[in-house]
Image 1: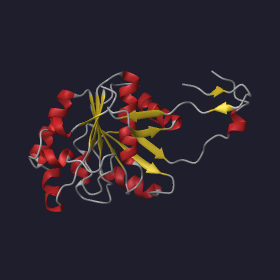
Image 2 (image 1 turned 90 degrees about the vertical axis):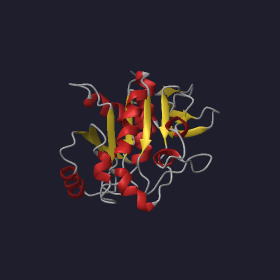
Image 3 (image 1 turned 90 degrees about the horizontal axis):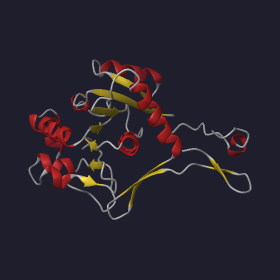
Image 4 (image 1 turned 60 degrees about the vertical axis):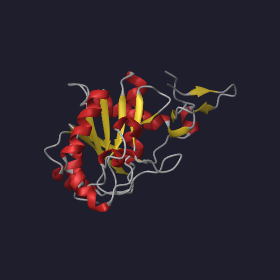
Length: 236
């Protein structure tokens, strides 16, 4: 994708990556610059070895954009590689909202209410699916985060999909984040502009060792190049 111009010469932003439901409702929209940042992470991570089949995205603090970016990374992988990808939300403490209201999700599978296939939210792209966290009773969260049942579900998902992108709760928000992050084969730290300090991020990286880290994703950076400047940049 690249910038295009109108007949008057104005710069037009490239089209975003849109994730739609099977009924063509919009589930999420990702700006071109966000997708490019995710592609850069993937390019750096795969220079010397293949991308780990399970990748944990996490942040030091809450509300740094982990859910949005984990689903965006899954969508980018599915779109670019035509690989089958599932974005797995493991944050029962603050589950995300979805069109159509709350869904049983992974919590429903763990509690025996429904089968894994019934909990998956399939998108319009046959390569991409989401598994919402659902609502889990507070007394069950810590036991399930460390349970054999959850590990078996991850193994089952790994047999169904080429890649799993795991949405992990903030490391400093709950002690259960560490065992959940360890379900991945590697990790990526998400830090938003104005969020966790450098020292906090460094301490979190020490806490999650020895999980291999692919890098740090800076979210909500306010460094966009003005359109009038882009008019002087040659198209490629």
